[in-house]
Length: 249
Image (cartoon, rainbow, N blue to C red):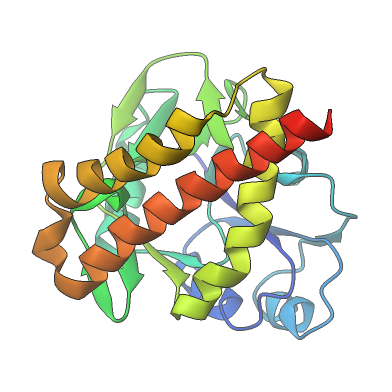
């Protein structure tokens, strides 16, 4: 049965990290890469693993690949600090490893919690993530945000879910909005993408329409409305900041 390593990157995640580590207790090892936490994150991590590394921040992709390189086993499952493996997913992965992996990597549905409700419609679901893979065939790639794993080989799909506690409060979203939209705008700018009056006006509207109506976000009640609205706001600020970068140049 192939051994499996779990990897997590952290910075000031004392509120989240213990639940994430508990959900990975079954793994053969857990590798944590911390980039300068000033809270109790590292202290908590050391209760669960002695494989805790310190490294200055170098971007999501580079940081996660560094964690990948520290793993002792070829098969890896990667988790963020605000995520947990569901019990169904844990059983599915362990059963899969007992019988042998048929693919180079596996996509896993991810379900987010907002205001104590699982969001199962709209743009947030099923949000399939490639998180279980053979590191000999896969690496993290992408820009400053929205990093993902690319593997050479076939990709399978699992049914168990990753539970994502992305925004416990609306203020969490607002705090991240500034950082993530700035990084996304910089990525757009470097790729030659353009902002315009039309994109500022119509892209947020169609983002809301797609998530709330076409993907039935309205079925998630008030939290579903919030998700659709937050998606539109995020798109607006990405293009507004891109427009600003174009004119600064």
